[in-house]
Image (cartoon, rainbow, N blue to C red; front, side, top):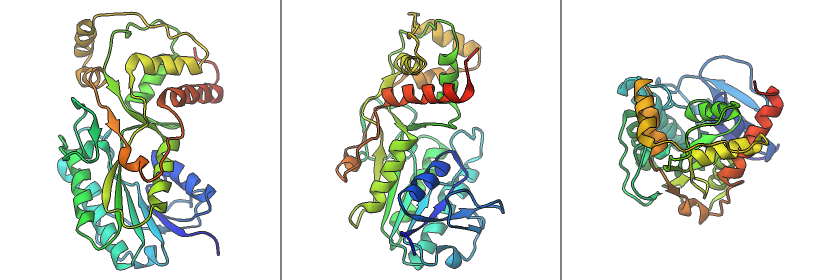
Length: 314
């Protein structure tokens, strides 16, 4: 007995761990699909071991399953990965799992795609899920191709395209930015004006619930972003607000910062934070999704909770 049974992939990852807790807390039974034998994660009602990148019989894994939430894949942070690796892990594995779900007559397939399936690391205007997709790298193409593969199956599917996700356990540029904000020094970043959309783990989890609950059929891709895009100085200020500190930001010509980043081998990182990537989640909002927080408040809360867990910064 209990709630509907969800098959969840990626349950040991940054997003998947949070989804497992959230799904369980909302009364779903969760069967996790694991790549290798490990202990069953807390909150899971069961587990099946198998490799999604290889042909396999998924009938047992999906028996009795109401919906699939597919969050496993090769992350964009795995820089230098060959395009074939992205295709195998993100496109082919999703296609095979989708085919198995269709055979099992699963009610809905929720795929954690990425904003990079829609656009590159920057965009001149507001990105909407109604725009023609134009991925610019192997990662984005692999996610977009996975969406196309799902669209060809006899199953009700939805691909969520989150922007940069922040939350406990995050890695990459946003984690580095929070570490920088925790430093005691003034930072010469006040002049950077590129705006970036963000989404918290909690808001993304709510988006998954909205996708699971929405009336059928969906069969579409939806952008996931909180409504207040922030500049890098605003992100720093939000983190420091959560730490109970002033922003401590000083002006510096962006060209000088770009030169410093280039000399330090960080040209791509500078380009990302100095340019715009603003996204609109109107399609998801029309289904009833309401972000849990604004990005500004969410970053402040994250910095506060992280500092409480880690102790005082040095």
